[in-house]
Length: 144
Image (cartoon, helix red, strand yellow):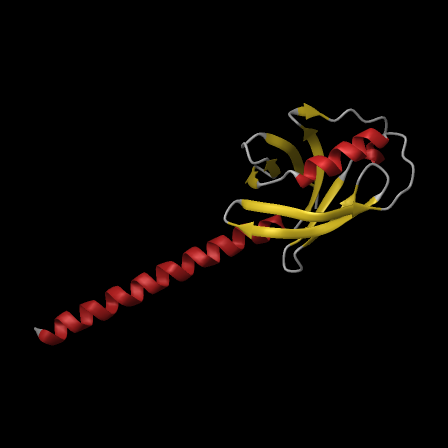
C-alpha cells in the first residue's frame, strides 16, 4: 500500500511538470508565430488609402533577436522588442531612414502608432496590435 501511494505521488508530480512544460512550449510557439512578415492593412480601424501598393508599410518581427524591421511608406524601419510576454508586446527605439516620401504623414503616423503597442492577437493570418486601453490600433496581414 505504501509503495502504491508513493508511485501515485510520483506520477502526479511528473504529470504536473509535463503540463507546465507543454504550456511553456505553447507560449513560445505563440511568440514564434509573430516571427514573420506582416503588411499593414488598417490603422486605427480605417483601411489604408494608398496611391501605390509599394507604399504599404511592412513589419518584420525577429523574435529571437528581439528586434523589428521592415519599411514605412518609403523608408527602412527598425527598432527593438522591449517586452514579449503572453499576449503583451512593446516596441522601443523605433526609427527609420530619412528619405522624403509622397505620403510622409502616413509614415509618421504609422511609426508613432507602432510605439503605442501594448498587446497583440493573431487571428486568421492577421496580426492585431492594441494600445494600453485595448483599442485596436494596427492590423496587419501575413504576407510571407
